[in-house]
Amino acid sequence: MSRPLFRALGLAAACLMLPVGASLAQPAEAPAAAASAASPAQPAAATTEAPAKAGFQQVERAENLRYRHLWMAYAVIWLLVFGFAFRTWQRTRDTGAELDELKRRLAELEARNG
Amino acid sequence: MKLFPVFTALGAVGIAVGHWLTFEVAPMERTMRAAQRIFYFHVPSAWLTYIGFILCFGGSIAYLYNRKAKADAFALAAAEVGLLFGLIVVTTGPLWAKAAWGVWWVWEPRLTSMALLMLIFAAYWVLRTYGGRGEGVRRFAAVLAVFGAPNILFVHDAIRRFGGAQHPDEVVKSGLTNDMRVVLYPSLFALLIVFGLLLHLRYRAHRDQLTVRAIRRRLARLGA
Picture (cartoon, rainbow over the protein chains, first blue to last red):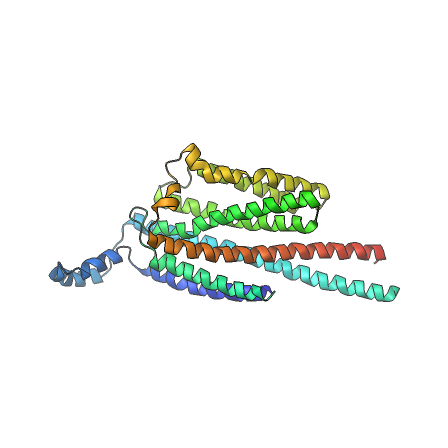
């Protein structure tokens, strides 16, 4: 029964990596830059600045740190949840095997005793 | 039983949507910037910790009242899942705090009372896991849960009652924009489904353990 859970959680993990990766890949000031580029008030400035902004731009360290903490927090959440689910699955599997074995022994014993 | 795969699929989709909303749709907060996005899973995890411990409280009361092993198994499963979400809260909280306040931990009322609540239920779990399977241990653990769970009221009300400038408590009640609510509630819903699935699996594992012990006793009586 727990197998569908793990399949679905695996699928969810793969899906959630896409927006996380896309978000982390974005430079921190991208929305502001996009907004200023789209602003009709300074069209000339936006077009002249565009080539310069296309190159590498350093983000301040504090901003970088905030992204790193965000990434770490979500990694911790899913490591804990998947770890817990995995341990539960292992335990259910072991108990199920033990239960089957005990039921078999009980049936044999009851059949022998009549 | 057929509901399980349905809820599993629903939970998986909910989590994927919750992450998409958190990382793509949620607005950037002005002062905390990216680190504020921890909020969308940190706060629902805190609420689910409360729910886990309240369910443990209910199961413990039921066990003390009727001595049914199933009630005890349910209380233990709820405490374990509650502790899992509590662990998420106390690990993501400092990561957020370091990015937002510049420190990992502050001894303010909300954080301190949450740490105490976690310690009480960690003690409950250690007792149940390593204290043996006797009736006395179960009863003692149930009493611990009954006396420990009301601490939730202190955690929840800590900022209003005792102050605490750092923790953004009132934000959840009034300071959230609609864009933020649209992200928070689907995340809560997705995590609630995950919580329910894990609780179900854990409870089933404990119930199977009870069955194993019952069959072992029966085999022993039959002389196997």
